Picture 1 (cartoon, one colour):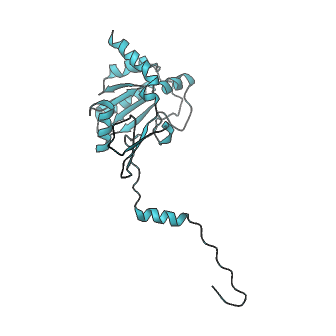
Picture 2 (cartoon, one colour):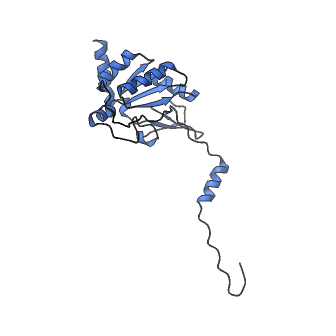
Picture 3 (cartoon, helix red, strand yellow):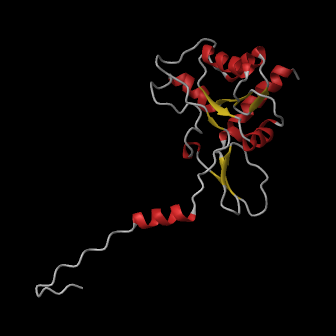
Amino acid sequence: MSAMLVLALALSASASGAWAQAPYKLVSPDGKITYTDRPVTAQPGTQMQPLRRDAIPGMVPGAVTGPPLPTDLRAVQVRFPVIVYTTTDCASCDSGRRLLQQRGVPYSERLVTTEDDIAALQRLSAGRTLPVLTVGGQTLRGYSESDWLSTLDLAGYPKESRLPRGWQAPSAGPLVVRAPIVTPRVAAEARVASEPALPQASPDPNGIRF
């Protein structure tokens, strides 16, 4: 079986595979909340909850405000969403991003900057090499123009940009979204602020106040 045929089969199977599923929310025993694109083996006591992709801001590939995508391009994007994983000061990441923009591929970008991000990247791609490109269920480690282009071809993305005028990719977001830490004092203040104010007692006609 040729390498190209294997790749085509992998892309086809991904429509009902991992990338057709929702992302996951992990809640650790101490209340720490993290999000991941793939199911993981968590520590004992950790709850893993599947979420819709629109449950977390920025988790939907191509979730942007602006002109809608052409119907055929949107259909390819829904079936084989493109996500590029990058980091700062990375020339090959810049090259990969530029390739997607020049080809007119609607994509989402995840930044790998923290230790949590690196751990999630290893679970995703079995390595630390950046950039990483996912097209549906196909994962490409490192930047190779020929490999990226051939994978986009097999997924059915147009060879020339068909993005509407004014369309922009969503802002890059962290790979692991961490929930803000709420201290007891902040929680108490929020609870007091949400409680309705007690009605003031009307003055007694005899001049006596309670």
